[in-house]
Length: 290
Image (cartoon, rainbow, N blue to C red):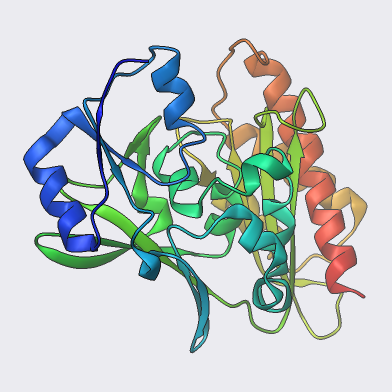
């Protein structure tokens, strides 16, 4: 790994000033579980790393009205263990537990997982299904955008020069709602998703039909995304059944835009979308029916 300058600013404002000054020669360091290995392997080079470790206001999980406010520096382990997340948004806690290993979850951050903008990012599908918003700050002030607008391409986000992701606003599901994240990977642990599927269902009081449904896919398009045509069919008034779940899986697979790479062929990914969507719908249905 080439030598680099290490900066430890004490405020978000100082981070933004450094980013504007140093430009493409600098990267923000949160957990470093992706950035540092890539630098070590020579995939990317940076002359400056700007650490966020000395800015405690970027970490934490708080109840804020009808949403949870989650700081960008919050670790994945904190998502898994948070009683507040388990109570208010169990889908996010369940999904976070499937990310890599305990060791990586102890270091990896929410902000880092999203800002890497990997199509396979494990936290992206559940947060998309939850209609999460991101808080972005820079020299021009603070702005809030929906997560679906945050991702612009593989490894690319809507962050402008001098801006950082400050945190998330995650609306708390209302009514008879539950979700599930289903991940298929080549190994049970420590592996990137070949297909990731998050489903959030809100049922009518009878528990037989969907009042609202959200389905988000990861690793099968340039960015994580919602399959809205499939969602519409799921909420068209038909009673929930295994057959309906299978049909929604087929519709979701048709909306996917997978590629072939070292982990899987595009054809196999599309088949696995069908399987994982069906499984996630059934599991979410079981959870909400308890």
